[in-house]
Image (cartoon, rainbow, N blue to C red):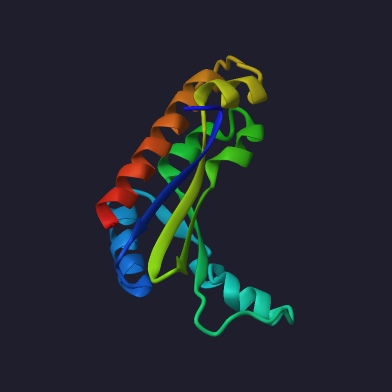
Length: 145
């Protein structure tokens, strides 16, 4: 994996059916979806006066595993830029498309400074754990597809 990667997948499932399956898989792995009521990007843009196609759907799911992120933030609050992960789902060409960004453990460690802490995981341990979370997200999406 390069330092930053766009994970891509698609499915023939209908948009709403896929979202139900994805939500079930996310929750089964102990993740939660934050701000679900604000995830509809089309509603957001229309609310801002931007015209959007009638048949276009596009959401941004904010995904987090609080049991993990809640333990590591106090050690280094700069980690907050990484703890929320976003999965984008949209329809295009009769398919439901899925995208999210992932970062290598090396990049995360480099950006955070490879700090060690007396209380809480080091930045390198955090980076390895987050890298594993991206792998888990890939499996979640694959299971929902």
